Length: 182
Image (cartoon, rainbow, N blue to C red; front, side, top):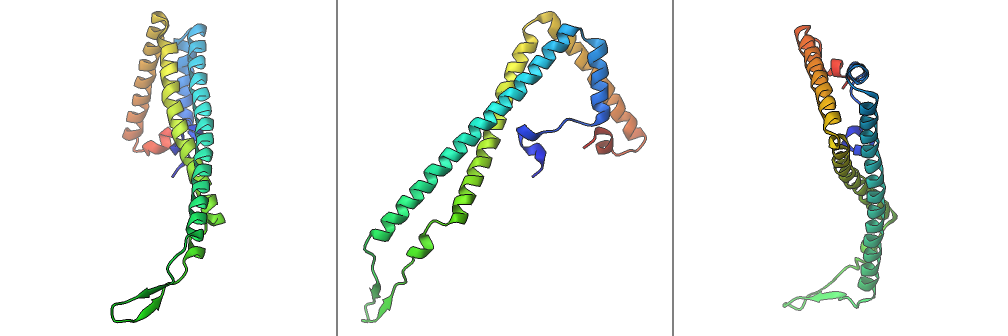
């Protein structure tokens, strides 16, 4: 699992692509367009952070609930009278081993429960935050039709330049992943 699997830790693309995007931001957009894009980007980051924190809290809460349920079940199992022998039809009697110590909740199990529930919560919360943040950012960008048109035009020109760079990389037989910085 790479660090890019979680929305909270995703990295930017390669340095060449970042420089190209900066050029398009400076030349194709006005100051208000750049501010709109920065506002939209900060909304995505805020939503991801808040979603990850909420997911972490939910994961810890659920892990606590699971652990306490497991402890209650163990205590109930330990206090219940259990059979000690099995009597077969031929009269033979076999002892049943006491498995109570094997059922006891362990520290390792508690650590694993808290870790996996917390990690799952961060993942789900971060991805949910990414979705809600993307929607919020989209609404921010599309609020003004003129700004939207300029941003879309700049993005189309940026994508065309990226595709030209990728085609040049293929023609030069360079590794595409080297050019994109992956």
